[in-house]
Length: 118
Image 1 (cartoon, one colour):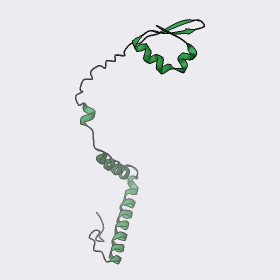
Image 2: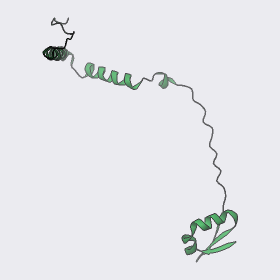
Image 3: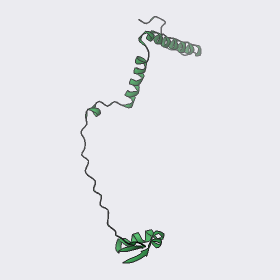
Image 4: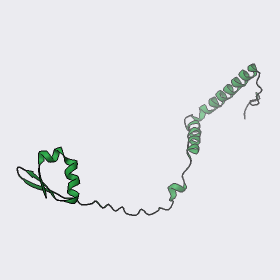
């Protein structure tokens, strides 16, 4: 058995903790003594059963599919029904503009033919 003061224990904690593995270490304080004992820690983890796929997993989608659906919903839901024709005409205008710019650069494109969409 080794008897140490609190000051000495605080100074050389590693030494006395290692010593407590093989023998009893007592720490003396003004109000009593404390026994330092070593006991190996035994942690047992419960076995986690493998879960079967549930409905959430069966209904899962890929990240690419999610992004595609978000873009579709933005177009469909954030434009009022009476403004959808405006959106279509803007899209046609942008398509014509990009084709016109491509023609100026000498690039052949095939796309909007200039006819009205039904």
